[in-house]
Length: 213
Ligand SMILES: C[S@@+](CC[C@H](N)C(=O)[O-])C[C@H]1O[C@@H](n2cnc3c(N)ncnc32)[C@H](O)[C@@H]1O
Image (cartoon, rainbow, N blue to C red; front, side):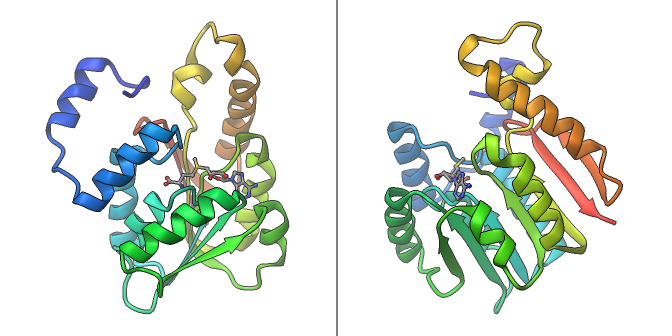
């Protein structure tokens, strides 16, 4: 349940959702049960729409988890377009590989195994769209690497910028105080880049949308 919108709005929007296919439904239930964070369904739909509008040839995702968002992205790419997705957890790589195989998307999704902090600086080619969805303490460095790897007019899509509502809250539970401070600092950095036209949208857990100018 979103902590960004009022509950009645969230319930209303959810009531309008077209049911996901059986694979996505299974993945959403699996992620919920195993407490693996994945993109909110409405953020995923927004991302799919951006893919359809922007028609990227090369997409980079930072944080694959079980490949829920990877599959949703890849299903909307044009033929010959590629999705590179970086993941450091061996367990998640195994799960993601299996789900990608079941989605019959193995040819268009390439998992780059390892820490994005080490992989991104050595990636040779630039991307049309980058989706940043990794550990929050890595966001600042990964953001700068993303800027380097993003083509002009490319889109940067960042999840969790309203972080359960806490960056805007007066009091924050102790267990979230460090991560909330990180997100508050990141949001200032994100919205003050001269090379990016940015906005933070109250979709899902808060989506940062940046276009490289
Ligand atoms: C929020 S989940 C990604 C969810 C996925 N994008 C989705 O919506 O289906 C974050 C994932 O990023 C991985 N991760 C976090 N920091 C990372 C890093 N520095 N390099 C590579 N993977 C990272 C975690 O292991 C985790 O699987």
